[in-house]
Image 1: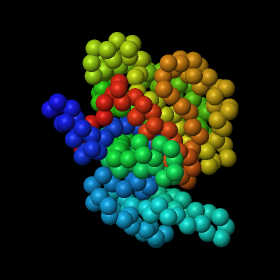
Image 2: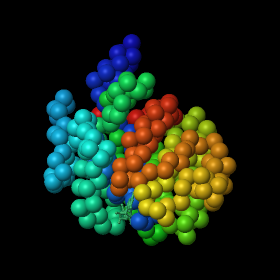
Image 3: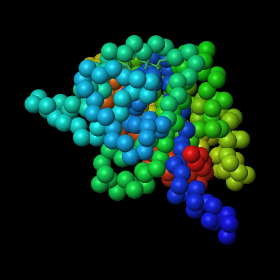
Length: 271
Ligand SMILES: Nc1nc2c(ncn2[C@@H]2O[C@H](COP(=O)(O)OP(=O)(O)OP(=O)(O)O)[C@@H](O)[C@H]2O)c(=O)[nH]1
């Protein structure tokens, strides 16, 4: 009875926190993704209930980035003010290659309050870990696998010469030994069967550039093998431009829905 009461108390008084790894080859756009997330969602340390500050085009960002109002306006040429503002801020920032890690925690919220999943999306924090993608840094990634609830793998869609390397890197992640010992209990150790046991969101990034390979060509090219290799894995490949804020929120909503679905296997932390 005490346990039931205490777990109900935890469920209703605390926020669920999911840890998400942002992986991918160097120059794929991982840090740009994280920087844009910081502009789109309030920081977890922002006061509860405080209205997000509207963003001016000329604003400069602080550590957590300015919070955006959800009331984005549309200009005469049809361009969203929100989209233009965050993109122009990002373009004015100098993003250096990541050598260690960048982390940030945001309060997730549904972009459409009428989304049938909107109630499930309440009280969720997402903690992101952006890890350096250079080859010499990739052997550090597996240290984070047991703690993570989901993976975002960013692919530079304009760099066809490195698609094979992306494929091999993803397969290595999926079959890393850490997944065997990654379960919370005996049952999930067995069910994980040495294969990644958290959702994997693959972002085909830089779709704003003319030389970007489109989703259909990506799926029928080298990544077709990936679809069968990751057969039992909860994964999805989505075309985006993290710089231009194309497909960002939709991708994240797919991932959060899958994190919630996978809760029995990987329990969130309560903060
Ligand atoms: N056009 C365009 N450029 C992008 C996009 N995303 C990232 N870039 C550019 O790609 C370059 C690399 O971006 P980063 O975010 O530093 O890449 P990263 O994956 O973090 O790289 P590492 O830190 O080396 O692992 C930068 O010049 C970005 O401006 C995008 O969606 N469109």
